[in-house]
Length: 235
Image: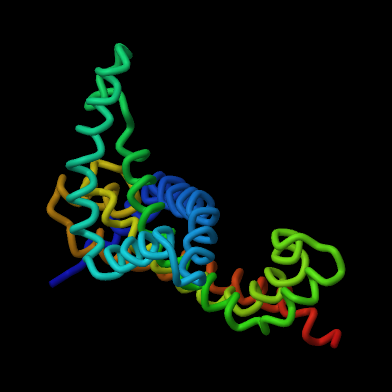
């Protein structure tokens, strides 16, 4: 078997068109999931009440089902639910034709990431001694101020490696967005390969792009971990 190197070189440059979609979907999902993830983590730490039980069921559902099943299920439900809402509100909008599938993918990956990120936040916060909260409250800080100024800065240094893993897995997971018609890196490669059936060359290009992209992300988080851990060396 002989690889078409000319096709690989040409396709590798074309994959840059899908790179902003992959990075944008990853960044938006992380950003939008951070707040809900923190709330879920706090509810699960309470261990009592309807909120804690609901948060636990949500996390269990996300962690216990395959990503591809979540995508197929949610992508079947979201447009239909949104269409019912739009029709009932009297809004003249064709949901199935005018809403970019990118936003459906963003919702699905945000819901998935929120559950996974909540476990990272919960374990990181629990690693901080409970006396830190008591000390903050004793000097007149509110619980939120204590979290923001004392607990979270320390917890972040613990959470950064796990957040790196979630980010890398999210970047790789966004390759499934092509199932919803989103033109990410993998979708662009499949389109290019379909013209001459050069699928092996296209997939090798995708392999290289993801290796480079994930390596850069890991180097960034290694630097972020070092910055977040500065308080330790100051002690």
